Image 1 (cartoon, one colour):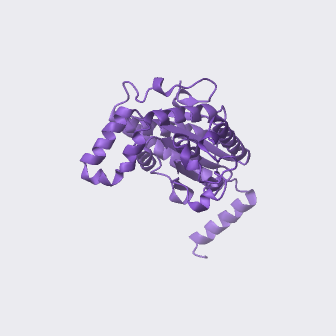
Image 2: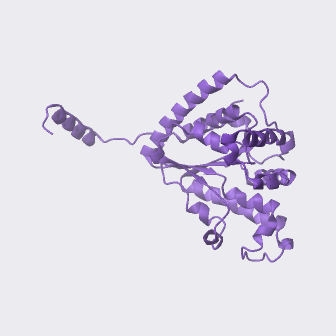
Amino acid sequence: MNTESRYRYTGETPVDLSKIATRVDRGPEQAVITNALTANVATLSDLQTRLYAQRETGVIIILQGMDTAGKDGLIRHVFSGLNPSGTSVVSFKQPTHLQLDHDFLWRVNQELPRRGEIRIFNRSQYEDVLISRVHPEMLLGQHLPGVNSLADVGDKFFDRRYHDLRHFETYLRHQGFVTIKFFLHLSREEQTRRFERRIEIASKNWKFSPSDMRERAFWADYQDAYTKMLANTATKKEPWYIIPADDKGVARLLVSNILVKRLQNIHPTYPTVSAEVKEQLKTTLHQLKKGEL
């Protein structure tokens, strides 16, 4: 079983995150990981160049995970070889007043890639069925129709949002955009170690926020929210990839393996040049070499 199929979840069976490993047993040695990741970065660079030249398909890469799951580091390592002119990152924070005056997918629409581009979402529209599920009180001040009390924010409300998220990705696919979704599955024990390092190492202190500890108290609620989100928004054509994230190096390699496979499946190619244009190019080259231009 290859990496892409091993970690792909399509929603056809129930998911229980407590039974899914957050670490790969007897993973590869660091040198093997480094070499394989370097090779994948080079392959992704070539695929991105072809994608950008073809300008037919836009790619949305979604990264979701608990605090300290390794999203930022993964972006730095896996996408390090991609051309910035065709690749960019968007981090979705707490919605602004302007964004809340629109539908919950409005701010996502503003950040979609152009055809030929790769846009990486560090967190995404899925925050609207995660943090709002753990803290439903945040929805009460958003002037949502039919939401007047916490009693209105139940399964029916989130079922509608799951429906909208699924159909949003179907719409994008029909328009020539590919969505690739990764959930970085981190254990509570590994999160503890990473928080400790952020406190103990001075150069990492800036990463730590008291709010991280407040949200950590809701660990079980977030696991439940992620379970429901995965089960309700994974499909055969728009799967989630559940990546064991306790080992950062392994997680980066797995994600890069999957991205190589998915981008290869797009079959990006350089545009075909007509015979007439080729003749013009030959003439131009001849003139350049003779110093006529």
